[in-house]
Length: 333
Image 1 (tube, rainbow, N blue to C red):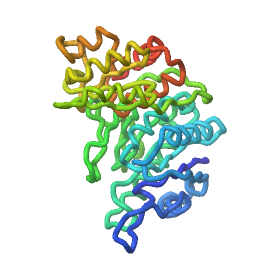
Image 2 (cartoon, helix red, strand yellow):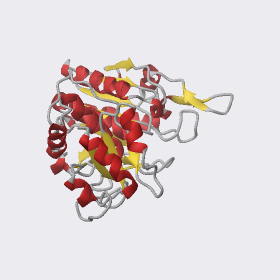
Image 3 (cartoon, rainbow, N blue to C red):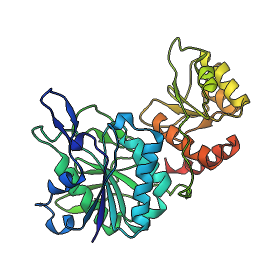
Image 4 (cartoon, one colour):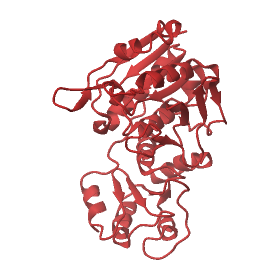
């Protein structure tokens, strides 16, 4: 049994310094050593890959894509499973990018991202337990073909649904529309239900476009904001609206400018559950936006919609092709 552990920093690899600040100080070998006593046989078969990644809040599209591609390459090369240790802030976006770029490769072994909410100098550090659980999941035959998952606090969440819902609690991760796809505990690894349908397979050579800003709707929003992003080279726009996807009417002229320029616009909602729907008309209502070409995100958060749009643009930037790609994910919510 051989598992590949890809270490990318984060709280799970951090300690408290003399200055009172927490920074990444631990590498993948340190993390494996922290669990060697609990899984002596399995950990002897762990191959460590250390990636030079800053705090997860400083990730770029290129760096996140490199994490996903290293995971895919490991699975394609014969490893029995992959564990990625990661910072919590944007783990859901990296997990979703792994799903989009490497889902087919998980037929060969589990693909699990894990993290910790407490650093290694803190009482109750949850890193070793999460790593132990994640190694068990990655090695489990039942994890094969399920796509990318996040393992934390004894729960498994699929990349499609997982959200970080609390800033600091151990139970920070949830899947608001579905619940955990499985658990890890005294009974071992238990899967509760099937994963969503696989997204379209993406060739490893496809580039992921990073010039995709998220524009958040709010009272008194700057009406020139979308135009400014277009002038800066935006290749796509994600609109983060309220409710069923409605946005302040001040953004509508900018939306039309993007659509007229052939720049795809995707509509999302800040709500944790449900998805955008063409219910409301009027200035900024999502029914009006959909009528002029705004693409529904099919329940994806703004962050995951941005990742998806970046992948879709890398495959084919035509707005019709982008819409088709999003529609291919629609049944998974």
